[in-house]
Length: 241
Image 1 (cartoon, rainbow, N blue to C red):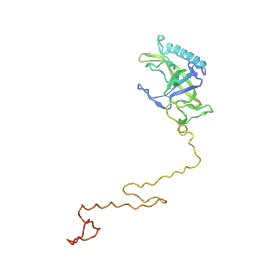
Image 2: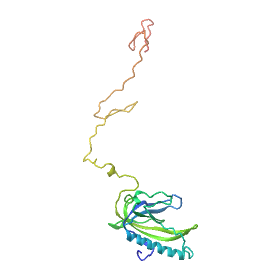
Image 3: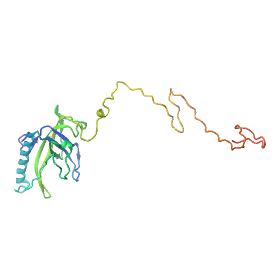
Image 4: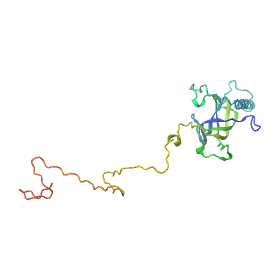
């Protein structure tokens, strides 16, 4: 129970995955875009697990009275999953889920994401990502939709605790270029290569080259070789080379 709400939980420190906290994301199976996040809660955090179990039980009791017409579903679907197990598709969870309880929470309303150093100022989108560590307020509720009955998990707000290795597969510049820092601007000798076919003048400091005229074709074998502008000794006509 959190803030006297039996269905609300403030988690311990969890790692965030599939974080859509700054822009809503549409479900893969289609539907209305929502803000959402998957919480990876360490199994060692038994206090949070106990709070979650108690809140799910409270939501189920509320559902009997309000959503399920007085009858508890025999097979109650809940949003908490074992990260050491397999997904509904039969595929195992990712390595980041090992040793964790996995819960996905969502909301139509944008959650507030703040840092533990200042809970009165929301974080910039660049500081919010999958892989960071946070405490999150979530609220469980009963649902009955198109014959499906179960317990859902609503997303409230996020308190960032610490940075972590991003889970999106995108490395930071600091990681890519580690150890390559230099003081001052490096000196790089770049040869000047004029573009073809009409080259502008070379920048100052580079040698200036005149364009080379194409070579005149040689006369066929047996013909005398004349310089341009010469006169044919037989016809007395100018030789056109």
